[in-house]
Image (tube, rainbow over all chains, first blue to last red; front, side, top):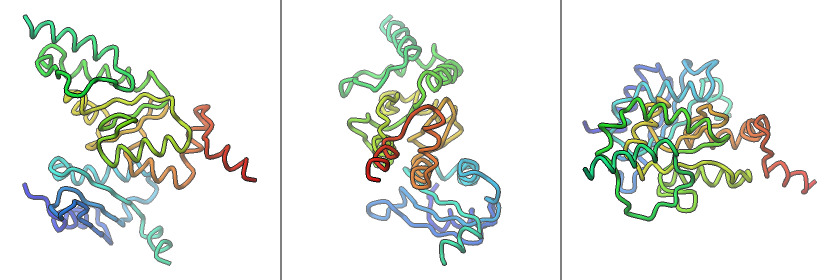
Length: 85
Length: 156
């Protein structure tokens, strides 16, 4: 399976009903070996960090087997608004 | 016969769970033991490992020589808080451990951090706890005084 930033973004948008997803390929030569993600979803509301990350890890279970590293920042829409402002 | 000896060595090693690993590079890995030390034993061993010490990390490499940037970040964060009495297990030393801890924590990546036998998360979570001040609080609950608190006091 080839994991791409688009594939990851699509899954997160669909399965976590994310309202915003930023994916950055952080591997040295952009070879899709590691990614950094900002995920904004109302599904994170009321959940501690560990639970949020578990949601994301569950959504990307197959993809995470293939790649070396996945950094994630998980925000609720409200937190995201604050951070932008 | 050789395999059998290796297997029992590996079982012993698993139950006495090596501290900050000082294995020389390129030591023999005992993959043949997998058949005797079943995965369930590994899960049990891991349960004991995370209980044995207040702070336990599973990393790539050793605290003195982390082999991955994320493992290094975990080591550096703990160092900043003056936590140097912790158990570090090098997953690169042992494929069974590497796979076993992922299943045990239901967490797909290394590093992994345990505080008071409880799974905290990986590098991202520890970093965010460090930034938010939650880590100081968690350590405090465990009776570990963060060096950052001391430093702040002194500067006042």
